[in-house]
Length: 561
Image 1 (cartoon, helix red, strand yellow):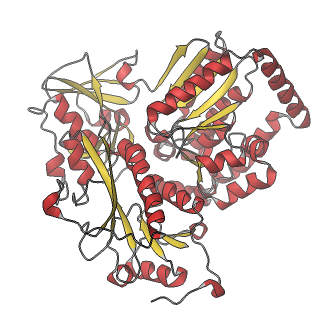
Image 2: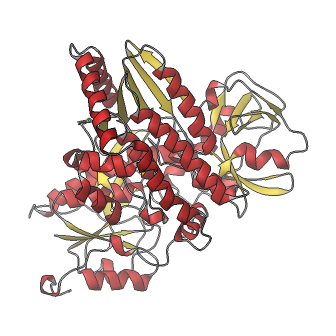
Image 3: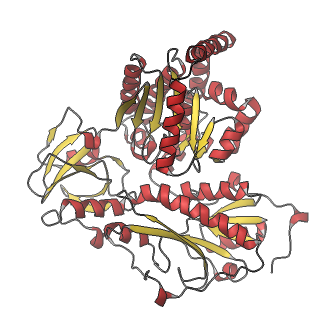
């Protein structure tokens, strides 16, 4: 069955649904909703049996939904309509929310229901909920819809607004999001910031400059005059509320790009708040924990991106664990991402982006090299969340790769105009084989955890449930650390590394990769420069990239009616 994925962006949820459909035997083509004409042309060319819209903020033309079933995923409970459904739920401190799959008609969010799912609304940002709970529920609903299509007795049920709790929600404007620092409690402030993350942020005027604030962490000890900036640490800025304080991790000036909040806000303040050299736990982005002989290393970076300083600090933490007596070191990533490699925003904002690109890439290379060259411990990458580019390659540096069901990997660089680094020319073929490694980096398509396992990029898949995955992963690592043949495993690991080094020294992989990298990052006309700017300034593509479209042969076409 041919399925057209119609979306406003090929983001995490779109990628997950794309792979789920492919794994269910569908022929899937992607069309970015850049305009009605483009959407209509894509339908006429591909002639799908079904259209699925995992993330769509544009209206579907009548000529499409009137002829082909269009299933739209809505991040809201049944009948709760409007583009800000999830925003209102978070700001209102709802305890339960959901996702609804409906068939498009002439009224936004009012079509027949194909399925609905609910989940507890944990205390997290909109983006965090979207990446985990919303995406998991959406994937389940789409798979159920595929089964329903094969059932001749299935019909979607009409929306009965009088019998269900949802309602039509207006768009949440900046006036609704505004924080009254003289009156709003810490809880209200946190709810508002969570509802605005990662877009559109909360608009404020600071030092005569319009800025947008993103993310939030509760501060347990500091306080000050309501609204005052009272401290900064690790790139975050602490601001007092009427009954406490919050940390703001990121900000951007109007027309600018999202950066660490201290980098954006401190130059706008008349008085610079004190810097806390000892990073408070609320904004500590790297930490470790120990359970028996297993050391867990967490690195929770915004957007999963690691700038030069973060790479170096993470390497320092890793070296400390290497020098300790833990038998197993587990790289855990963060709460929203495992890792997405280098920090393009910080690179773009640097005085010399080319030089910062070089420093950032070499810093992450140093980290990956340290993981590869770990002779006395078994290393594990526990991919609780998605990983991409250099982050995906970094995971492959570990001896074992554990995947949470539903995680999406993007083991490629080409869409950013990069030839790649992080020892990918050594790590990816070692796992997937040379032919498949080249295909992955050239096709630039995402992989679902099950596909990664089949290709050799993972060793085990555990349950998608967050707590269940944690238990299963910890059990796996405990058994690994207590293995009777642990010494033999280390011996075999060292022997393999020695054999690999004789075939081709690790430094040569790095030199060859960096030669290609330098040719790109120091060339002002290279595609990398444009692609990086488009990414950080969120400039959408004018048309759907060719690698996302599936061609249909003439003899495969059916009459479109």
